[in-house]
Image (cartoon, rainbow, N blue to C red; front, side, top):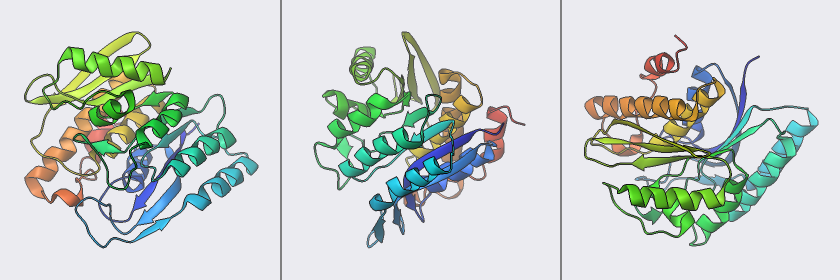
Length: 279
């Protein structure tokens, strides 16, 4: 039977992030992707000014209630950017409403990078995000997000093992779920993730492309979700996600390097299907 994911993100109409990344990537892997949009923006907020914003907070629970009424079931719920503490509360309720004991909850606590919270988030937002992470089966914070949630300072790469282990120990106190800590870098030229499944810690790394684009975190976790639902292990899924994301960045840097426009993940989809062993 075809797998089905409910993706709860905003829709940034231009800029290749959130739902406009999750929907095509998950669908390309042969997995049905339904969406609950938390807001609609004309563009994402990084590098654009004067963008439009329509808050859809009031629509989250009516969608969840309708899905419950229709008896719809999901193999996974995948959450990304949530714009307010209220939305965190509602997503927790929504998951309880239409989720089952067999529904995986994959939480990407999108809220910060490079040592700073994204604009518009209050200082208490990371502590509120902990409540959603505590419910999750898998969380995928980056270094900054993990540091905020566990009250550790943010450290630039290259990282020490002691620092990464400290973040993981803190995250273990937040959730009983599996942890994929992204942005781990022990030496120049490579970047990857620490994958913690119970007491089993594995690292995956891919070549680091010297470029930064919006939406790459969404690409990574969308791909990780595909790998998990297709039966791959946590570290196998993370490695596929890292390789695919790196390929998207490399292609974009070579051909269309406008940072705020996002990466050309579309042209790399054939490679994604090979990495997932679909073709």
